[in-house]
Image (tube, rainbow, N blue to C red; front, side, top):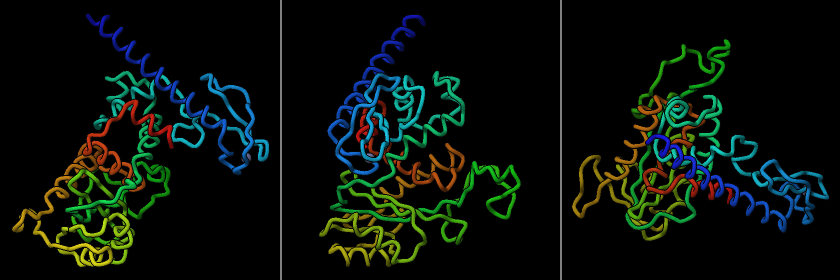
Length: 305
Ligand SMILES: [Zn+2]
């Protein structure tokens, strides 16, 4: 029985790897007619083949050479046969050690960590489409974290304190100890999010105004910054009590639920994440919440960068 499963696994892998190869070939073919990524010069010449068999190019002007993964998060990532499998498994959080031992991704922990963040970088940017209709907005706070910083062990601590074991609080307003993240979402599944330098009204409105379509309704917990955003974008602003619901079904329950999911991923499942990776995890949580596909679909998006 297990032999049959192994064969099934083998074939599935093979099919996916064929798809990776096709995507790479397509990308290298598209490079043929496009200008140099470095200098914009329009004449690239063929310059041998990569190990994968895809065409490489050289710029006649600046002498830079390019392959199918240049300029994508896959650049110089090895073990190509595992990319699809890894991306398939990103539809939920699986601890890196489990990926190694139970899912057959036989790579070192630092490599698995690097892969995770290479792939997550494509999920960070906000959608081009603006939020519209009933928009809920709020800030969420995460503890500043230097998790994984080598200085802890090498005698150059990033902060004047002992290393913490794990996890992180998320109460509001503890000054420099907390990192604020601004999130807004609408009822058609759109989610915008960004890390804020501080919680000043001006910081919130600068970030949020470009996300919002005119004539929408912004619901918040009453922070004056959101009234300001509404005014600047030609929207209405309504204050909804946390956990409660106003007449007409106004609430900020969706954003509260989303924040709980993100917090669960970051503080419980990952036991806290380094602040420099915070928005990568927000991008991951957004894609999982939106039920968008991982696997080969995400790979195609990565190669379309
Ligand atoms: Zn060039």
